[in-house]
Image (cartoon, rainbow, N blue to C red; front, top):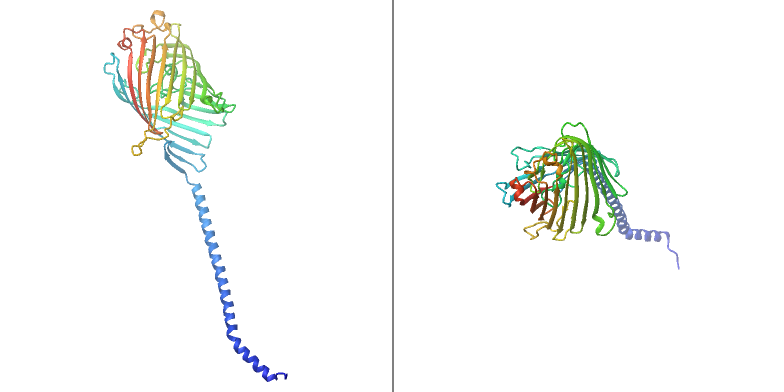
Length: 452
């Protein structure tokens, strides 16, 4: 075969190049498009990342800003405001008790009445995590026999909780002598044990718990307020302070059985007091023992038991009050009470009451929780309190003893609202010259309470 000439080869190459030129151009365009697409994709990725960084920065700025804003809340526990780290907080609540008192005994006369028993707006809070305060004014008349406004400070105290085992409280607050304040767990009104102990007192108190809450304590020095009073001021002008406290033992708190809610305690005080003692009232809030003149040593002892397990609750307390009086006599009075409750709707009972599983709702047809309660209590007045034994009480117009028994129904509509109904009978001994004491006492009390 003859080889191609140089001219022929050149001709063939030019022809091939002309035939392939469109394909080469297409490939070149495709490469350019790919490069442009890659460049656009890179730009999109950069834009997306920039947007992500901006969003992250905005979220971080928002989080940092929210950390600087206080937390505001309103609910069943009141209206509260707290710093983001919870180191500072303030809360305002409300307590309103509207009572109806109806006396059914023959000596009732015209004692039936409606009263505002308590109207309070407690203001409390925390400062620097460990310091707490409470300022609670009272606006209600409280005493149905008074025509004056009863506005006063019920509580005004500051405490520091330095550890679980030790804290200090100063100011005006509930005395540690009695187990419960007059706003007690089962019934509308407290009974004789509270009549033989101070209500509020002013002083300084150490408190805490040890051994994993096996033992809790309160121990303080106080002005030495008279029994069942709110002022907290010293009794008369004796110039002496009173030492008081309460020890509480929780022996089965860590047990997983019915005894876990059992606690045993004893409260007491000792001091030197002078001045008028307080009158003693019946559960129906009527004076049945008058005032004496204190002049010397004053001793109080009040052992108690509390037991809360499931729907059942039981509280028992004994109070002994011994006071030297003018003339050299020493009078020792004794009061006791036992009260119990059973939650008919099955919820757990606690020291704070009952939280209904199904709060009252007319729309949903739910009614809250119902608790049946009962109580027996008694009072024995020392014979040395009467004029016939060297005292100053008139035996014709003062009771020397009392025995009370009653039952009630507590209706918890929700965690804030409750309605109570109590009926209680008291039989008096002595005091036949008084219509009230001669006829004994039968009352029916009602209460509508709002608390948050």
